[in-house]
Image (cartoon, rainbow, N blue to C red; front, top):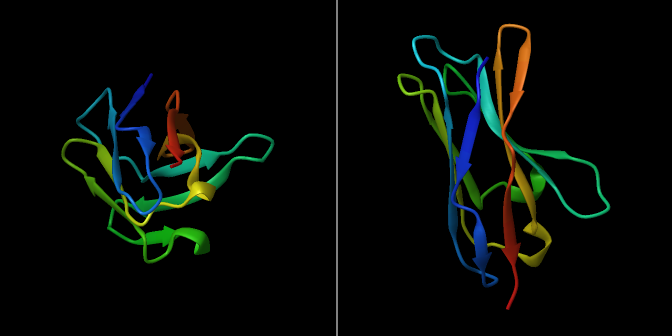
Length: 115
């Protein structure tokens, strides 16, 4: 069983920046994909960004140009650098990873963008 541990959420003013980090509890194999989803109150969970083991990235249109995803395959970690944050980015952010046919999820970390 693999656990994903997130860190880095919090409260930030509009226009500010935050970095989210996620680490898988096991090493020795490379996750096929890692990424981040988010869920705002009353809304469905949505993709924020995902990165393949080869470094191919995919971003939600709403975050393109503001968020950057990166990963370290050797450590099975994934980071999300969030810049120019907006109030509509407020949500619980979930780390995601896929190994073969199994999906793994973190517990979620709250990001609140408010003045």
